[in-house]
Image (cartoon, rainbow, N blue to C red; front, side, top):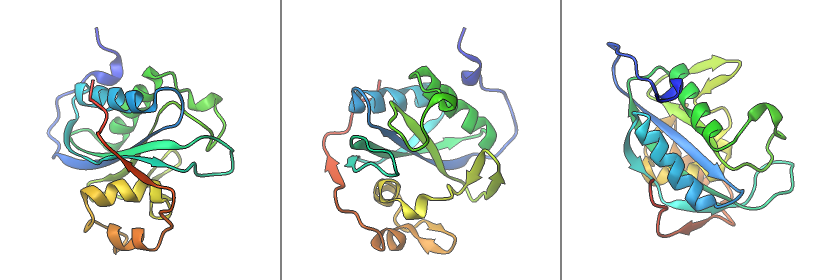
Length: 179
């Protein structure tokens, strides 16, 4: 029996494209990223785009090692809340417990919803577009690879990225295998 976060319920909702940013800086980073993308696909999200894998400097006040980041575009009929719950379940499958970790600290896997169709959501635990994505090169570099002309708040992703410091971000090849 699959865990509850994998159960798809029938609905008559339009399909939306969501952009997800994945990051990892503990353990087998590339392997974890590949397995996480595979788990997302097996959970019923249709992956319609996938950026290259990038090594990025850590962001935030906690000293830690570099991250691997990538962005996937998924097509879904889930609501934003259902998508968030599914992604939290994927993180949990890799041992992440957000209630016991240091904010902005190291992690085995982190999955953020950057964009969810054209929707804007402002709830205490769910903000879309991601409230800090336009300040973070580690998210915009892989997002710009997939959708440079996409606009957020009237600004093109490529233009927002051009204003950020991308020093230390290295594109890695090949992409991790999807399990």
